Length: 192
Image (tube, rainbow, N blue to C red):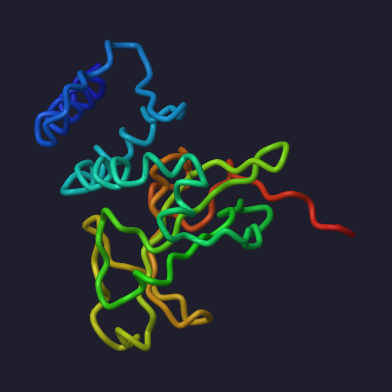
């Protein structure tokens, strides 16, 4: 019960901070935005503390319109569908839409370089996460890791970049900042 009360306080403070008129959900109800249940994700963020709950709300506010992939594409994310990335049996990441215009030396909570979409039946896609990146050519691997969401970004030597996933729109039992999400799946590849 104390956890639910803490969550309500976090939601109320976030709403007040951003001038929103939203109110915390009644006890026993599920916070929903964009047709997505956010309660478990909010609880993960609350347990991490620091700026994580506030940053999570900021990235959601900034990307809420991108549940409509056409809105994301109009904002500069690509129109071509990238491959769906998975690592069975661990899970998947989905399709990575990279806005190359904002890939630079800084990361900004409200401007993720990558939007991750999970495939859905009928060729639709669902916004599930964001990813922040800085290439090593801009910030060399040997330097101190950049930080966002109170986290050090991870090294991805095969791609020569720093990165951090944030599962802002899909619960990930592996963690809010995990690479792979066991709840996300890619279509079966031909011949597999």
